[in-house]
Image (tube, rainbow, N blue to C red; front, side):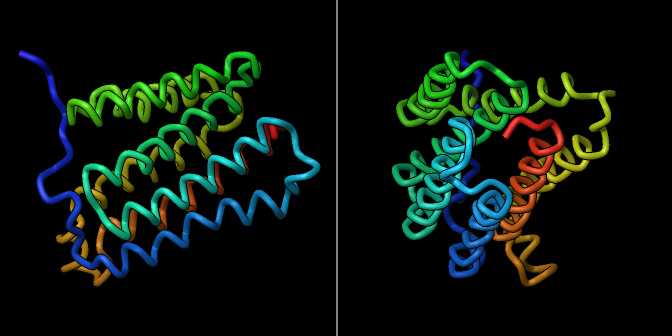
Amino acid sequence: MTLKICLPKGYHKTANPTLTQGSNLALLLPIGYLSSIQPYGNSKFTTKLLYIHLCFMFVASCVYHGNPSDTTIVPDMLGVSSVTLLFSFILLQVQTRHLPWLYVMSGVSVAYFAQTKNMIPYVGVLGIPPLYVAYSLWNRGYNREISEILGLLVLMRVLEHRDASVYRLTGLNGHAGKHLIAGLVFVRLIQLCQRLKVL
């Protein structure tokens, strides 16, 4: 018997699709913040890559939420997984010659989902590298930032999977809330990169 993690039933239907689409604008926040502290033209190679990946994630999310389906979610997943891995590589100060592994891991996990609808490799990509980053930086003066970021990531997943319940309670559907928090998480990650002087 194969262990399988699938998208929750009805995942593509949010309680307020218009609000969900509009909330994608929160994903521009980290791009704007990054440009305010490190203009693209003067930045390192990995910072330029971060710009590109954040922009791709924004576009892919807009496309997916404009027409949610198992097909349109694939680029969205690729955007999220590649940004997650890139932040992990930057924070761990992995040498640029190892960056192709980012695309291998991200691409394989998303391609596996596209073929099988099994999210296990994708969940691994979203979970294991950030936890390893947290472990590596713990007790090095960054505990508050790490705790805050991990807490926000957990809250994002709760909101995402309780979309309608959150909407009934607050008037803001969970998926929209996830996007708003995601924008904040990416800004906090950029600030952590700043503190580590890796941008």
